[in-house]
Length: 112
Length: 112
Image (cartoon, rainbow over all chains, first blue to last red):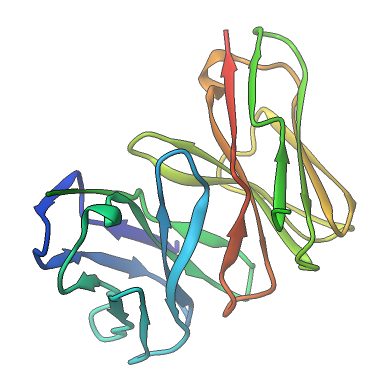
């Protein structure tokens, strides 16, 4: 079946460090891929998306590229800030069937 | 006002009680979803709906039921609550595969 796997957390970084959160997916067709962010006590917010192979989504300094050959959608940021501390979720969405499927989430903690 | 509103935000209930969680949206989206979030498990899909007459089970529908009263309203019911249904519940809406989803603030449910 369709699924999403993320690297396990928590991830702890110092401010201005480089961030990578790995995400791979299993899918039988051509889903859209997303990263969502959840700040403490809040719901999930869409961070970025890519709807086809080789698309790059970007927002707030975060980037992710839809890699069909490696079925991956890794999240990167060149220089993290304390305010980036949150839980990050990778997700895929199919039109056929309509399910929006999430990974287990990766907690990021950025220290000053 | 929030685009996706969940009520209540917090609820403590006793084992065996029936409880309803409500969700309303102003996005005008046809697709609505109910998820539960548990630490280390990410978001798991309970039910989803494409329109008022189209209700589908997700991966963990046992013990839950839903009602789509209108395009804008999607309620989740626990007919007889049990302690392992203690979780954070999220409602979400989507306009389709490419658009991503919009989440409510969540309902923290505790079953004692």
